[in-house]
Length: 217
Image (cartoon, one colour):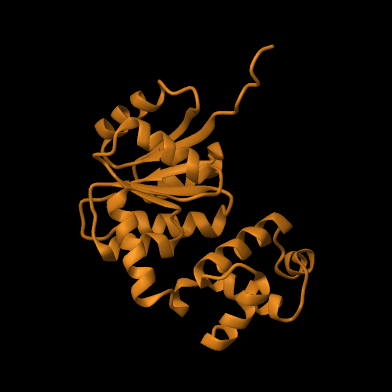
């Protein structure tokens, strides 16, 4: 009996350095579980490419220009809003508490630095594509420190997540929320999972209670 075929994770690379993109792509092309379907070197090009190639995972560098801004953060936030089913994984040389926290709040599902080996990068891509998270030990420690020290504040929720929360508080079903906001039921479920994660609860009813206590709705 032949083993069942597994679908390769459709992966897109976003980095402003062509040589780095080529190097990462050459490594991932050797992995049968990964299929690199697109590349981009800037914020605008990346948004267009995501729409074109419909990846499962976008691997994003935080610095996409020579300036001081971390355009990768803005890109992650925009992808999360436009394409909630696409997982963003940060792959960067920069590692500090503020950047990791900002990336997570923007919608990144993982954060690894560029000295990670190929095996760990593949595992990270597979993890976020399946709805999980992936952090290397250093970035994971930063997330844990932040969560244990101060928890998620109101700013961690996007405007759309607050809209979903308010409708949850009104007792609406996922289908009803989707019809009200003109989004699919699967997108509603995605937002609810994010809300539950960000508020540190396990049920939607608890999310409504905590959100009301914190003044989020």
